[in-house]
Length: 196
Image: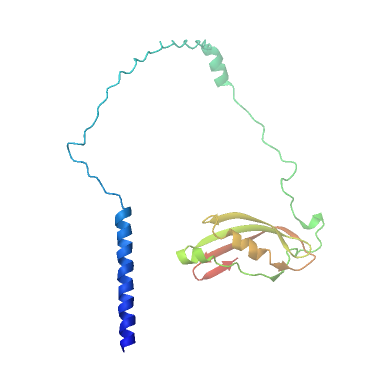
């Protein structure tokens, strides 16, 4: 019991001595603050003589040359002339037209989807309750892989495009039936992702 009292008192004495030394060091090192009185606070006002600015004389702008008015008879003649344009005749179609006569043997030329993976709804969009629609045009190559994914419409922009591209590049179609400009529309709502 005597031993525990000695240890306790020695710890208290040591802690007190350390606290005293720390406070003494802080007191010695801290600079004294001098609070200036109202008499000591004097403001010095200095007046400078600024040189006078010289203004450059403004240059007069040259008047614009006057245009001669056209005689009224010429204006009336232009008004009287009827502008006749011949109707445009289209000899070639702007886009290739697919008909049975131009060599399509198989009417069902759209490849059948083998694997379609839905895009992942972005976590940030779901957390914020953001819903949207995205329209995509894409091509299918002869090996049945999706290529050339193009976003046609996206509302809101730059929210769902990345996930759509990642999912569509994993889609597979039947081989041997390439197709261009296929369209798919995605709808992102809080229930999930749907496509048509």
